[in-house]
Image 1 (cartoon, rainbow, N blue to C red):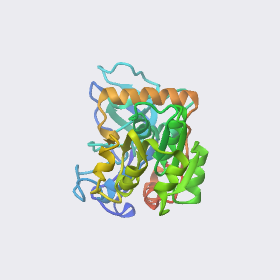
Image 2: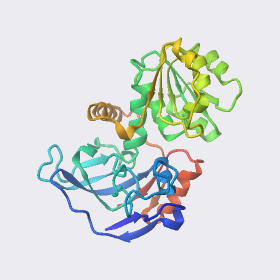
Image 3: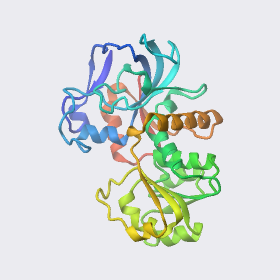
Image 4: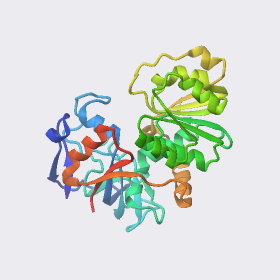
Length: 329
């Protein structure tokens, strides 16, 4: 089978190659999936470039990247329950602490990392569920309740931010305020259901948020370090913050007393590490939202496998709206 892989970290066009490789041996708890699509997330390109934990050190002699994918089950191990040949599924964490991700025609993966793909949901959309949609669902549901609440979502034009807007809207948010950095991002956020979109660079961001909301009950934060001071000013008493990123300030200074005297709860979250019960809650809600049509796909571009390097560069450019995929069927 064909797969995209690298044996050292660095520039996409320098180290990514397409090769014919043998299919890994299946274990009794594994599922063999014929992949239709592979999703490329920022974490995938950062890992390949040596910009994530571990730096330039290779975790395995060779790595097939990408954690997200969707396809059809080709075979199941002897101990696998709940899945049968021919079912449509999506996967998560395929490239997390594993050498064999989804940038390949076939995937062998433990059945506990496989989820049913609801009828009517495309493989392309299924490929976006493992990291982006699951992050959004988990971030939104860190609040005790969303119904009727004032919600702030930073980066609403991003892939996770857009899903978070849709999830919050589906769960009955009273008002959703988000930020964007371009006209494309602004239109994406408005199209997802945001009530107000602010320029994240404006000097009076906290005042603008307060003018629109009177105070925020739950915030979903992609750049916690940059926005910590602002959040301390706009959060309501007993509010909550779900932070899934802080790339621009990796060692944030927290306005402790602003948070403490409002009894704000801060959830630092990494979707890769959800325990089984929490992940099941997220995937169950995802299935409900997908079936109801409450969350929709937003695909920026789809590349063939042999253009994997171009796809990585598009994700790195950060000037798109939507997910970047590889077509494998």
